[in-house]
Image (tube, rainbow over all chains, first blue to last red; front, side, top):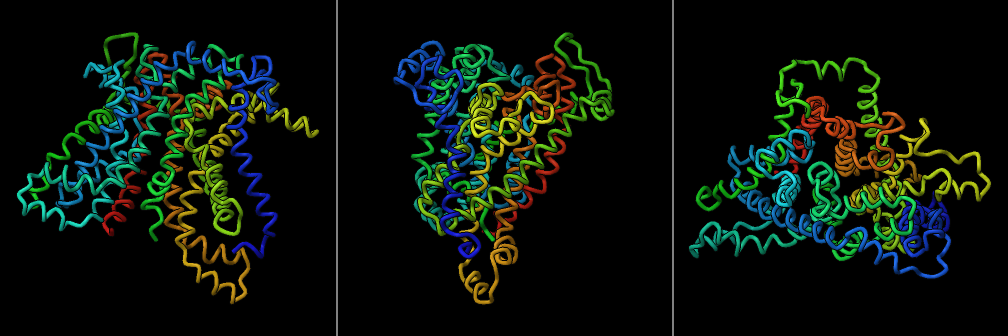
Amino acid sequence: MMNRALLPGLRNALAWILSAMMFIPLLLVAVNSMKTKAEANGMNMSLPKALQWSNYSVVIKDGKLIQSFFNSLLYACGATVGSILLASLAAYVLSRNRTRLNKATYFYLIMGIAMPTNFVTLMKVMQWTHLVNTQIGIILMLAASSIPFSVFLIYGFVGGVPRELDEAGIVDGCSPIRLFLTVVLPLLTPVLVTVAILNFMGTWSDFIHPLYFLNHSEKWPMTLAVYNFFGRFQVNWNLVSADIVLTTLPVIVIYLLGQRFIISGMTAGSVKG
Amino acid sequence: MNRAMYPFYFGIAALVVYSVFFVVPGLMGIYYSFTDWNSYSDEIHYIGFDNLAKIFSGDAKYISYIENTLVFTVSTVVLKTALGLLFAIMLNDGIRAKGLHRVMLFMPSILPMLVVGLIFKSILNPATGLLNESLRAIGLDFMAQKWLTDLSWAFKSIIAVDVWKGVGYIMIILLAGLQSIDKTYYEAAAIDGANFWQKLRRITIPLLVPALVVTTVLNLLHGLKVFEAVYVLTNGGPGYATDVMYTAIFKEFSNGNYGMGTALSSVLFVVMTALGYFVVRLMSREGDER
């Protein structure tokens, strides 16, 4: 549709320029993670004379990355599994049985998509529940903040799953929980995968919850560890770059594996005319 | 039948976790906004509207928190929508290596904001950063700036970094919107001799409204909640010139001024919940149609 307005060659060139602008910062980090301290001083695009793989081992050791990697994995997986389980149970009954109470409950749950977190009073709640500075506390907070959007997406999807299957289950004498686990849950797989990927990436990237609520470095996720590492090694851009690469790698891998689901999840509900 | 097979208790766990760790702190915040709660004393006194009066008293500091948050939100909404639309139109058809471009343009949206902040801290470094170096290399020395420490540039730089990170996300949603538009509209318009701008104004934009509403809402909510971009790039500086609501709240919290922190948080809570009410009404209506 644009062909007449702009020459195709010009459009292709423009596309490459824009893509390069988006990509160069990432390339910059990758290149500098392989340099010596002196070479990486300016964080420029010149290539390293020899590849310094040792930067990575230094970072893993000094940045305590193995510990924080497993912390991140625990928080992201815990919050993802928790929020999906709770959200799918809720979204399923709320969508299937649309009484006034259930509609109001749904409305209340998805209000969280817009509401901001009050971190100051959340601290008080964490103290009351004795969850401050604990790993389970972080998981619960992250799960709580993922519930609204998860419920929203799953609720929409449940509406498209035929009720006849539930009825068949009921006729066969399934209990509600068995009906949900053996009949409904498998049918929700597409949306659950989407929600899982979105939640995992969101919780992996979270920085503000641990910043407020985790004082001990052995419980830090990678985001907080990398920020602290930056604070200590600001002048060593080669090490900081290697640290950034390692922190980012998991989300990039998940993204490349789940690209299809991410795009469909993000565009779900937004394109309807 | 329905009640027996779809028991309400299925939703209780979600309700409890969400309420305790999300809604209750928000509501408690309203109460504590009226107190002098702080880390120096165990007693909490009711002080009425003192905190809120301070926020809206015209004190330059508090004005700048609110102003910056609004400027950030409006600028990022406008820029991301405009650029996202441009990218989406560009990638919609007639371009080679479309898939590759899509991945490259979207890649920044998946990175943690913290990481993006650190990367741009290096790029925007005035002495050695890639941006100033490149400007000098092509002879544009006069354009080199102290991007993150100069009063007139710091906030613009933060906005630019956030747009850089988020534009791909908006592009993907708008691209999906574009692809759902029936091609025959354009064919008919072409027969009538419409030019590119006419097609954009009369067909593309009107039919893209649902997708534009969604991206605007997402950007709006994201903008009001901005934290990491500011915290990592400038930590609110120089002075408090680039502080936004969430960084101000964190500073009050770190200084032990819990009452004030929670008052700021409650201002945001009330504004966003009111905004959210309309958003959610809009979204649940769409859900019912399905």
